[in-house]
Image (tube, rainbow, N blue to C red; front, side):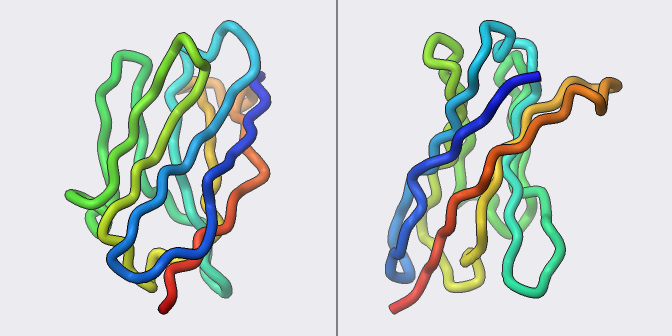
Amino acid sequence: QVQLVESGGGLVQPGGSLRLSCAASGSIFRIYTMGWYRQAPGKQREWVAGITPGGSSNYEDSVKGRFTISRHSAKNTVYLQMNSLKPEDTAVYYCKAQLPGRPDFDSWGQGTQVTVSS
């Protein structure tokens, strides 16, 4: 398993931008599929975006065109660039590392708070 540490959250006004980072320990980071999830107060955790080891990405419909996931293998880091933020994007954002077919290898970060408010 890898250990994950998120950073970059904060308070931003509607329409603003933030970039979240997720730093992973271990040299095998490159073989993991990485994902960003979020959990708003009173709601279940939901998937936001994912990126494969090869760099293919996909997004939940509500963030398409606004959020971009990327990974830097040399830095063992995955990013979530969030633009045109809306109040409904307010949540704790979590990073997840997973190996398809091996749920025993799943790892989660501790989360970082994103608050979109004027």
